[in-house]
Image (cartoon, rainbow, N blue to C red; front, side, top):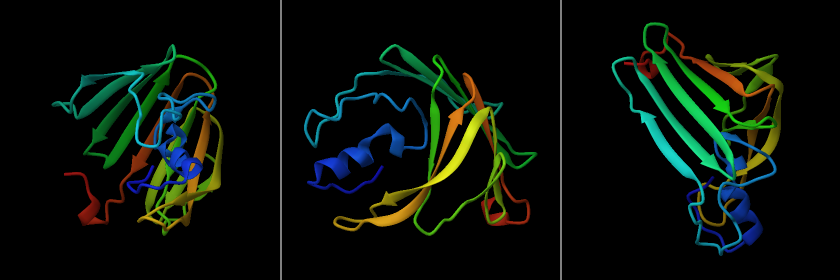
Amino acid sequence: GTFCYTGDKKMRNSFRSIQNHNTLYWPDMEPCSLNNGLFHLAEEGKIKIISNLNIENVFSASYSYSGRSHIRRIFINKSNEEIIIEDSCSHPGSMIAINFAAEIIPFIKEQTIQINELKFTLTGFSSIEMIDSNVSPRYGILISAKKIVARLNGLKSIQKISIPKNQNNNRLS
């Protein structure tokens, strides 16, 4: 997504699309109609917070739309310096998008995405690829960027993000 407004309907809808957000999606549907005007997104789905961060450092939420549902659980494992994102969905054919800022170029090797010392290990995916994308840092400016798209192999996936222990300013505390 972007925080910038544009009168270019095609570009604006591209940025508003669920495919440009870091979440699970089905390529053939949007959770909200993008055709109700440039400044209107009617909430057509249902979101439910299942648990806030608790003593076990777990946050979970569910979202459903058009008869499909998605549950995301986020575990913060401080002792292992990692974040684990677990996605479960109701129907096959879903994908995950991971969008990056223009200056970040990820490297993919098998089921691992690496950015410097930061590692994303992906489990439960049949394909992972890096594609060209765009970001808009301010009105009228469009910059090339990279995006990872990964197709789920079934109805569940896990993304494990390992935080480098030698970078104190990025540690989980």
